[in-house]
Length: 171
Image (cartoon, rainbow, N blue to C red; front, side, top):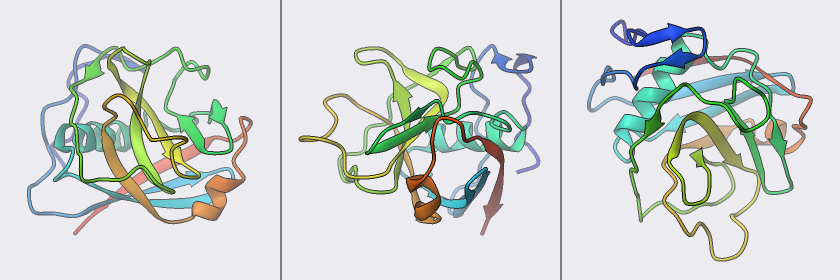
């Protein structure tokens, strides 16, 4: 992951484009998210959403999410990754859709946020605290991971909580 640098950065939270692919094929990636409520471990899904996973890893490794507020916390979802802390910000670029019809949107599912009918945000992500309400999403959301431990920490996250840091491990 030494090649996962932010070569397109134009400022602390601004980039001209998503980073080139730097993750390796046939490897497993995990993100350990240290929050004000404790640690949450997310198994990343590079086979399903390689561009999204690569993007998340690059931003995490370069400290983009450090101090990010969980600006949204509802019964079924938490959302973070906005440098503005209110749902309006991002890194300056959007991500392509990476639909994955075989992945369910259940407890612990992680995906990239989007404005309904709009593009997929380059940094804002959400994690489901319960199954997606109703019949599920009506648009494509890039499913990039699944919480494998620490779901109890996310269940108690409020809008005053933050991400301290995110570290990445590879096997």
